[in-house]
Image (tube, rainbow, N blue to C red; front, side, top):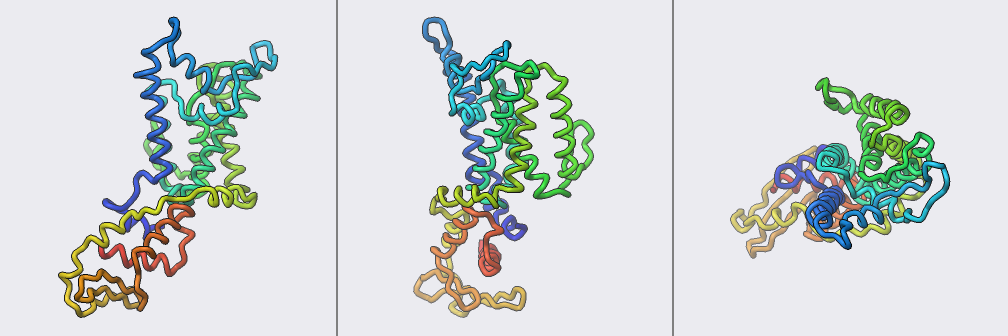
Amino acid sequence: MNEYRRMNGLGSFRFFPPVLKSLLIINLSIFILQTLILSVFNIDGTSLNTYFRQYFSLMPIFNPNYELVTEYFYPWQLISYQFMHAGIWHLFFNLLALWMFGSELEETWGSAKFLTFYLLSGIGAGISQLLVAPYLGQFAPTVGASGAIYGILLAFGFSFPDRPIFMFPFFIPIPAKIFVFIMAGIGIISGITDDGNVAHLAHLGGMLTGFLLFKFGDKSGIFKLANKIYKPKKKSTFNDSLYSQDYTSFSQEPRIYKMDNKKTEVYDSGEKKKTIIINGEEITQNKIDEILDKISAHGYQSLSEKEKFILTELSKRI
């Protein structure tokens, strides 16, 4: 992982991996749509945002009399509610947490697994809120990415248990695994005692779903199926900058680089043909694209030692 991050550093480290970036943009765009457009226009005195919330928020399926009422509930709400927020600070802190804990997971897992994990955690959170919240006197519609993010938080804690996290208001480093337990404890206590507008049960549902996915997702084949469905774009993150260098300024004598007792040759043929030789093998642009697409789809850990070595050598030429 460290080798890949060195290559992606300013100019190549992806602070916003593709799926994470898309999630941030979608959440922000929907908030702007609701705030600046739908809230302004109305039909017969009713704001368009009211209709939008009615159809896309997660509507409760029980009324205060504990009777099953599903006339406002639609299955797609289990996904759509994850992209809606109640206010600017609700949006800001959710997106900040998503970026803090999600970027490294996507780089490690690959985009397909990350997106599947995120959405399923949010769905699990929504189901928990629908089924359990009414028994605690909560009957309001639910919005927000918090449930999915709590699943991401748990996965981060399990993936990087000793990573220090600074927790407000103490600002002292806390191991990620301890931070997860603290957040879970706060969620349990708040879910029982808080009668406010925060969907603590959705948070716990997202954590529980995240735990099940983390432990059994690979064995169940869910992520394998997601990898087959997800087809990354044929795009290189540092390939263009590599090949845009003026190799014709090099001498025709090969340059020799040594790493782990292996030889790497980078030379120019004298005919302006940009050629890279590593361990006697010509590394083409297509080869680099294949490696980067593999990282995008399945994560850096899916690379062979040879592919990792190739990326490390290529990074020296950027």
